[in-house]
Length: 430
Image 1 (cartoon, helix red, strand yellow):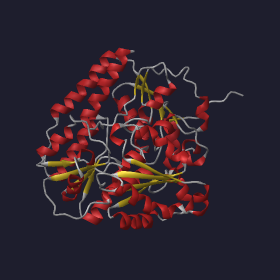
Image 2 (tube, one colour; image 1 turned 180 degrees about the vertical axis):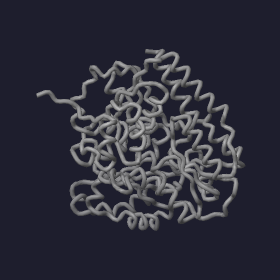
Image 3 (cartoon, helix red, strand yellow; image 1 turned 90 degrees about the vertical axis):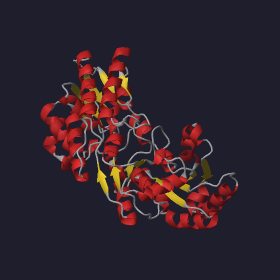
Image 4 (spheres, helix red, strand yellow; image 1 turned 120 degrees about the vertical axis):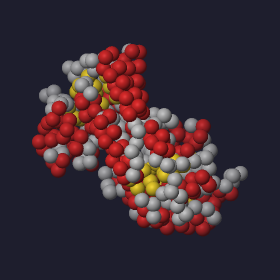
């Protein structure tokens, strides 16, 4: 009997509805296949911003990883990076620790010892714990309070709990909330705004900076651009927050509750007309009219230039990249290209894009990177000639690939322009 990778077409999924997504496409209903998604996207020790790198977003912070050796070992790749080589410390758990929980008494002492042994006192110590402590039911908030008293500086938890990935507050949501929990109420300044959502800055030529400036904003704070801890603390002076990634909603709500800073949410999009509509709505909320004609035209020209060079582009789109695989696929189809395959985690939130995609490209196949039958994936006959995302490149090794997973975040019209410039370059180099 021939085994095949499980998939559904966009049309089939829309007919089933968002409340009847097949279990094969839901990762917590079966064993997980360690595909490129788990290696490059989900793994907290891998490339990109997992819990460990994200937890060190606060300037001057260090991290104590409390874990068995196998869990701590995957930090080696990050700690070899120049900016992190002296910021990771380890408290390894043995079998007795796991059975008795005795390691919990060691944490405050370890934090104090680390801080006393450093020439420069850290701004905050992040305690990273793993699924072991999730199963033990460790009250990490209490442990951090004790460590704060011992060390005389802030200590905060960040949870590397793969078990909670599909829960209400998965690790990457919690860590965003944790890194902003150090901010204290300050007098608000009407010309200051925070960008929340990413752990690295937007690309320098993103038009959002200029649009905010035109609206009277003088200071745009991003945690990744803060030069030191004192500058980080001035984020509490913001008049409002812009949420650029849905995983920052909890953090924004915490800002609102604790610091009385409201927020507006913008979505990363690759459909030029939808970007324009979103900016119009944003401008209306601020009482201004943005002038985005020139940058919009730059994005449109980049799409057109690529279309002229590659009119027969047929894509496979993965989730290991800076964007929503379903929204990007919809954008590509609307620009006149074909999307044969998508590798992505389908949720009710991005089902709206799938519904629109099914109307214009019903035969697009949707695979789950974490479905075990992906072991049998066969690219033969797919007619894909361009791929976006590391996972899509893995499944189609013979096709030009744009990884599109850089630290600097593409956004808005600048993101669209840069993507199509990268696609054109990949095609010309092939």
